[in-house]
Image (tube, rainbow, N blue to C red; front, side, top):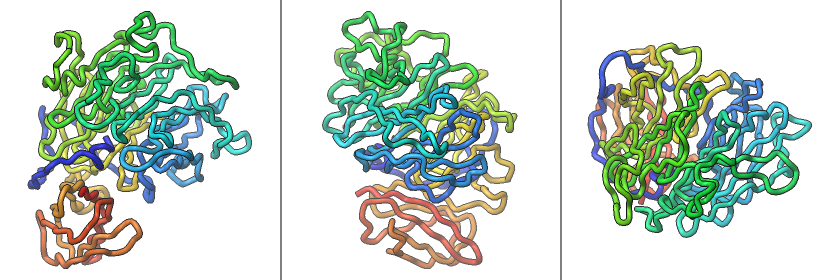
Length: 474
């Protein structure tokens, strides 16, 4: 997922952005993202504690977890995780609260440690402040070696309704799973892991559930629930059915969304690196195709510019009837929103929404949220305006395409005229500006002497201000 932002080199073709594209027709909800939190630093996960407090916790990749009340007002820093490797895909990546957090105060975090290995640790909330964790309560639960590469770390932690902790790991990074970790039963990389975490005061801090699918198989590690994944950066359980939905980032041809009904057993092999989506990738030493479970939905990468799927959630909230029962996922590059109707598994694709979205989450009542690397968190709601770009029900917003640039040019769509464009670096300094007065439609911008990194694009004029983010790859 984040690997696609920093490590993959993909070519993009600018095109005139259509309002939305449907692969099946009517009745699908048209969605809008309403900003609820701004000013975040590389947010990658957003969760609730399930303790009745209706608070929201935002995980920032640099190691900070911030806590907000139900009105999205900052309550403070809940925890800073230290001693982690950061940069690219590394960092603090996920957070999950115990199902009985209200009574026991335990939660778990997933990060890359200082050696670059994958690590899950347990913490406890402070006894004197519900909005602050006890930093001294840390206990490392499991460490998974991740040698050589910094990408494909997987990350997402979720508790199932069986009370066990599940988390997904990437295949170890690089390209093509050169070490074949995803198909190797003696590696925890490229897997879905299921463990029974402990709230005790002494090690071990987890055990293997007796009904894990490979506990009697000497060729597969006991912790493994499913295998054959590439980089399942974001995945979820349907809170009503407990069905599992996995967004698995593709190599160069397909992005995929995998589905497992709650009633099915574990032990599924999703096929990577033998298959990428529904296509053969490297079948050397692989079993017949009937041994693998193929995606519920996959799409071309790039299509154009569509790459790095961000798995989401099935909407089960009470506020938006038109969204009920739809699974929502997105695409970090293009901002495409993939909407799967769980009643019949038909899929539609909506374009023109915020890109750089790297995580979805739910409020305690099941309302849907997401976070973008542009530093904002959004509420996912039905669109009530005439344009999917119309966040404030006013005029359409500009749209940067692509926002991840491998070169020195990008295209920005200008629905209305602005007067000046500025490129601003991470310190707030204006490093480039130009007049764009009178220009509308698709406008190509050339960057001059811009190093790799994240930048703010700021448009001003005629009483309007627009800011967006671009990432430059060199």
